[in-house]
Each structure stands twice: as structure tokens, then as C-alpha cells.
Image 1: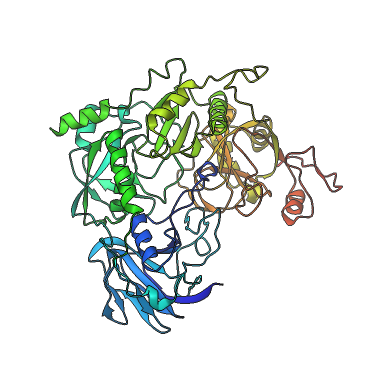
Image 2: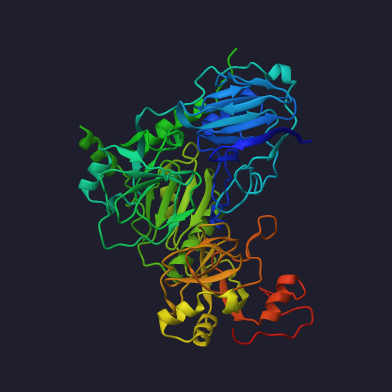
Length: 318
Length: 278
């Protein structure tokens, strides 16, 4: 039984309903989508007693404001966007009660780019193909396949435990892993590494790139040393995983994120490893610079093993 | 120091090409959770068919740790869980596949059973408001609109894959005289059902979206609905034939007054209407 818990007063530049993604339908052209900083959403969910893959809200940068319509417990993780409850500063990574009339607002980004709001019981929108994530391009899932607008009412399912027992819970780890201003992400070379000259590869893996404002959930557009592919070859469209760094003839890399299309026709110089994708989700255009460090596939898999253990381990303090 | 590490990263592509030496396939990592299997042969109907046979074979193998597979023109991207399925094992499995001829050889242990190819008939209202780029295509090709429609409807196409937006089927190959570039400026919106041309491919927009293809007509059929079973009218490997219909029949099908048997023999529910030219 879903009940209204939140009314959106101002959505900010982009707020969408996301869970951990829609898996298994890429061969139909349905992108995975989902929270770009998946660990942050998982942590927020666990703070409020939800399943890790329950749906929450992904909030970008600033300007989001909402009013509680019902009794609930919520938590904010991910970027520090200046969260405030009824004007008082709200700590990240701690679950808190909300009562009808309470106002939640985000004053502006202090660190990172995307914050995650989990609500006890999970955001209740119809699941499409097994997921509540919003595919903005295909207009699937989430709230009517679109970003949130002023006036939207968010409903939540029943909480997993009495609200008093869910409030005031803390994490035994950070509420997010946020990138340094000059941040490095690790990437496996290719799959079209051999379409690039050794000089281009050397440049790509040593210089830092600015992040352009045209960046969005589909990808980060980078500005920096041009690394064009060797001329004369066309890549027939092929599957493109999030993390792919594609480079068109102009030599400007674009790092694809979870909102990207399922297929692409540009060569990929490298593919960012899964544990570092959440860092890219928190990169702010115009602020952070991104560098790429090459890792072997074996190293990438070692990192993935350790990261998975952490992700699924105990995170609630006390 | 950094250069040495980079060199090692590049050279360390697990060298499974030796395992694949009896097949033309290549396998390379696409990040830490996907592997790109590719045919160096040129993209086209034959390559697409081989990709689909590999895909079906992999699914039949039932390897634990395969998450999903995404066919491309001449590639198959395999998403896998490396904590369950090591890359080396996936590469060895692909190396074991022998793409047998489709007919007759049922005894080979790894013979992929061919999916029965379907023929899908798609009704299209060509030109006018339904095909706002038909005139532009006429300019680009030097053909008159009637000849364009005749060429578009005059052969079957293969569905290569679905991608870009949910349910968008890439089909080919167009006859060379119909090959046109994408629009210089994409339209901000293209209606659901719009039938377009780009390069040697033709496709149908499954839902309203921005679109850069040259739109020559529109189908009243719903080509993709995530809430319907089957969701997609078109599957990779299907053969597709476009058929010109009148505006009246288009409206009847759209309104549900006439039923179009896309995979059957013809029009059901008593109507004898068949389309003439665009």
C-alpha cells in the first residue's frame, strides 16, 4: 500500500527516480540507467531499512526543495549539496524523521554532484521491465518516464520496521566516495585500443581533462589533449557499456555513464572500471579534472572483488 | 614508469587469440564486466546472422555468470560477472564454438539450432505528412517518390539488432540507390511509427523521440510496448517487408478497426483493402 510522502516544490536541474538499474533488456535497446552513484543509493536505502535496490531520488547540484506529506524516515547520501531540514543543516549518512509540513532543501553543492534521497519503504512508482529506474531518452520507468517537476507527489511503500527504530541510524563508513578536484579513475585499455596511436594512448593516460558543462547522465564530455583514432576506419555500431571512453574524429573523449544508449559507433580507447564509475557520477563540470590510469584486466578484477565485498558488507554503525 | 605500466596494460590483453585460432572471432575486454566478441568480416546480413547464431549458442550453453548479450552489426557484447565467470573461461568457451552450417548437421554437439526466421510485414503510409522527407530523398537520389516507394517495398530486410532507444530495429541493407545520409539537423521530435532511411539502413522509430533519419513514411503498428507480450514486433534475425497502404487503411489500423497480421498471411477481420502507392 503506497502512501504519499513528499511533494516536490522545486525539482532543481535534474531529479529522477532511480534504483540500481534495469538489467537484461539492452538487446531491445533499453539502457540500464539507474543511480549513477550506485553505492551511495545503496547506503541511503540501508539507512532507512530498505532493500539496497529500492528506488530513491537522484538529485543534481542544487535547488531541490520538497515538503513532507506524511510521516516517514529518510536519508541523504552522495554529494554534499547543503541539505537542510526546516532550515537546519542535515548531516549526510544519518537517517532522520520527516513529519507532514517538514521542508527538505539543498542549498548548493559543497562537494560532489549528485545526492541520493532514500525514503523508508522505497519510492513507489510502477516497475517497468523489473526496475523503477528512469530512462529519460526512452521515457520508460520512474515517474512517467521523465524528470520530476514542481507539484509531483512521491509515494512510498510501507516501511520495513517502525519509523522510530529506523531514525537516527548512522553509517560506519563515508556517505560517499567523492572525487578530488584533480581525480584519477582507472580504466582497462580498449576495446579499440589498437585504433589509436601509441602517442595518443600515452597522452590519454597521462594528461588531465576538463569536464564540459554539456555533460549529463549519458556521459561526461571532456576537453583536453586531442586523442583522435587513426583515420580511415569506421566502427559498425556495437554494444557500449557504461564506462566506455569513446572518441570521435575530433579527438575529444566522452565517458559514457549509465544513462547512455545501448549501442555506439565510435571507437573506445578505454573503459573505466566499475568501482570508479561512482566517482565520475560525482564529478562537477567546470570544477573537477579527470585523469585516466591504465590497469590490466586482472588488476581490474582484483579491485572489483574487493569493492564487491565492501559493497555487500555491514554498513550500519552500532 | 607510467609508460611501462601502460605498455603492460596494453600488452596484457589476455592472450586468448591462440584459443580462438580456428575461428575468425576475436574477443577483447570491454572494461571489467563485458567482453566484446567480434567478426573481422564486414558488417552485413551474413555477419549479423553469425552473431545471432553465436548469441543463441551462448544462451544454450547456459554458462553461469552471463548477465546479458547485446548483438551489433558484427559483434556480440557479452556482459558477465567476473566473480562467477572468469574472462579466460568465457574466451575458451567462445573458442570452442564452431559455427556449423544451419541445415542438416544436428549431430555436432555445439550446433546452434537456428531460430526459425520470421517474415514480418509492416504496413506503411508513404509521403505526405507521414513522410516529410520523401521529397528530400527524391532530391538526394534523383528518383521520383513512386520509385523510392517501389524500391523500399521491393525487397526484404534483415533486422540486425535493436538499439539506441527501446525497440529501435536497425534493418538492412537498403538497395544502393536508396542510400542517403542522415538529415543535417535532426528533428526535435519524430512520431512513433516513423519509417526512416540512413546510410544503407532503414528503421522504424518505436516512440516519439528526436530523430536524424530521413522519414519517408509511417506505420500504424506499435513496434515496441514494454507492457505488451511480446514487447517488440521485430527481433534480430527477422526478415521484414514494407507494404504501402492507403491513408484510410492506415487510420483503420491505427484506430483498431482493421487488424494487420504482421506475421501471418494477410489482413484479418474481413477487410479486402490493400494499399496502392504512397
